[in-house]
Amino acid sequence: MRYEQNIEYRLRRVGPKSFLIRSNEAIELAGIGEDVWKCMATACSSAEIAQDLAKIYDAQPSKIESDVKEFIDVLSRQGAARAVP
Image (cartoon, rainbow, N blue to C red):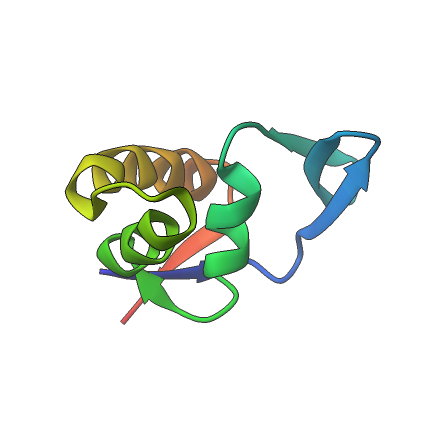
């Protein structure tokens, strides 16, 4: 399955913290959350995101992908990410 950003949300940085902002809602992005969000600028799968992050963090994509899937599920439930065909 491929995912993309909900364009109603905008990434904002406040000091060292990152947030997804929409109207009167805010979702704080911790850890690699901002990197996952940026990877979803174009529709991509969790495996593709894991591969991109593995290059950045010098890790195995297979070890990252489950965390990526979990984070995308959270974003999807909150409306910030959506599945695309």
